[in-house]
Length: 184
Image (cartoon, rainbow, N blue to C red; front, side, top):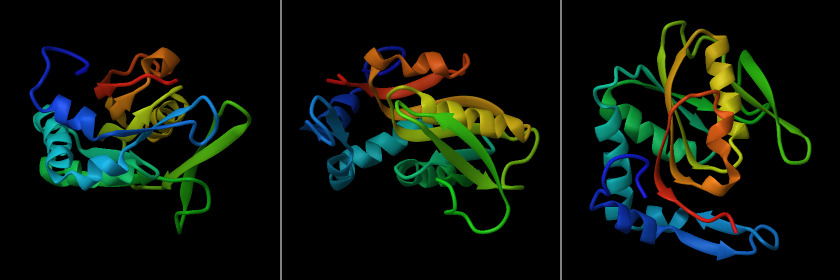
């Protein structure tokens, strides 16, 4: 389950706290529902602790959380490792001046935005989301951060759907995941 090394004793609790909803939001999709993880305070704490333990000594200066579930995991990690949190949002959700990055979806495109000046050249960034599937959203976040001069140290997700090969779209950036799940 862990992306490297031996299995941590906390991973089974984390994995079992994630509910799988068949055929949601459409037939053939096995939706990985993290709301049940959030209801289990021990599994939620273990999740945050595992990320904090990994990033505490990596000189991260910014945790960039992808809307919306990256907003759940990112702030407690940022607080624990002593850095800022920057929300990466859908279009027209942030007030003030923003920088945008368009990215491809299965059918069509979307846009990700962050505040101008939130990330500085030389910042060392961790990008966090709940799940990586095709990698399009994480890839857009990486490009957006790199455009402003940040160094993306790693991407982190609670769940990976490895059969969709999203990690291959990250431009060689490392990916750390806690749980590998089946896409269908």
